[in-house]
Length: 417
Image (tube, rainbow, N blue to C red):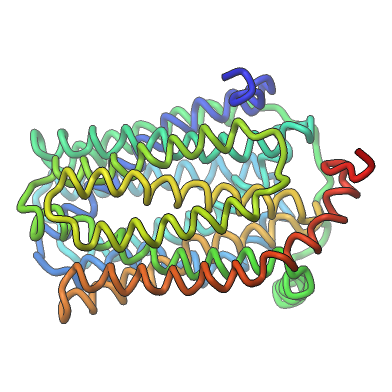
C-alpha cells in the first residue's frame, strides 16, 4: 500500500487528493441524481441523452480553446474559479428542485453552463498535477491516484445518491454536491507551488491550436492513444445514457437499483485504479490498454443481455475495471510523453476525446434506444468498441517501437540492463 500511495508524500498533492476526493463524491451524487431526475420527469431515453449531450458537448467545442488559456494562466487560480462556479451551479439546481418550479429548459441551460466550466477545469487539473508533484518519479503514480480518487468517489457517490434520492429526492443530492466543493476550494487555498513560467503575451488561439494539432499529428503514439480514447468515449456515452433505462425499464427497479449499477462500475474501477497505482513504471502500459479495451467491449455486450440487476452489476465490475485502466493508462502515457510547453493544450485534446465524444454517444444512444431498445443499443456500442480495440492492436507494435526511445531519453527505460 505504501507503493500505491507514494505520491501522497508530496504535501501539495496530498492536500489536493483529499479535497478533490470529497468533492468528487458529491459530483457523482449529482450525476446520478440528474440522470434519474430527467428520466423520472420525461420517461424518454432521447431526452435523457439530450441532457447529457448538452452537459458534455462544450467539452468537444470549447476544450481546445481552454487548453490555450491553461498554458497561459496560474492553474491554481483557474481551478479556484472553476470549482466555485461548479458549486454555484449545484446550488442553483438544488434551489430549483426545492422550489418545485424546475422545468426541462432550465436543466438544459445549467447543463451547458457546467459543461463550459468543465472544459476549463479538466485540462487545468491535468496540467496542475505536474506543478504539485516536484519529484517527476512520482508523476505516474500521482496520475494513477487521480483515477483512484475518481473511482473511490464513483463507488461511494452513486450508493449514497440512490439511498438519498429514494428517501428525500434529488434536490438533497445537488445540495450535498454544492457543499462538497468547499473541500477542494479549501485544499487549493492551502497549496503553495513553485512559480512556473507561463507563455507571455495574448493567446493567439488559431496559432496555438494549429501548433498543438501539428504536435499531436506528428507524435504518432499520442495520436493513436487519442483516437482509441475518442472511440471508446463515444461508446461510454451509450452505457452512461442506458443506465437509468436498464434500472427502471429493464430491471424494474428504482433509484437504489441505479445506485447499485453505478457502484458495480465503481468497484471494478477502484480495483483497476489500485492495480495501476501499484505499477512503478509506464513500460508495458500499451499492452494493458489493449487488453482492458477488449475486456470493456466484451463486458458491455454481456451486460446488454443480462437478465437481472445482480448479474448486470457483477458484469459492470469488469466494465468499470476496463474503463478505468484504459483512461488512467492513456492519461499516464500522454503525460509522460508530452512536452511541458504544450502540456495544457494537449491535455485539452485529451479532455475533448475523453469527455467531448461522450455526448455524441449519449445522443446517438438515446435515438437508437427509442427505435431498437436498450439491449440492441449496447450491443452496437460493444461492436464499435471491439473494432477500435482491434485497430489499436494492429498499431501496437509500431506504438512500442516509437515510444521506446522516448522512455530511454527520459530515463524511464534502461536498455543497457
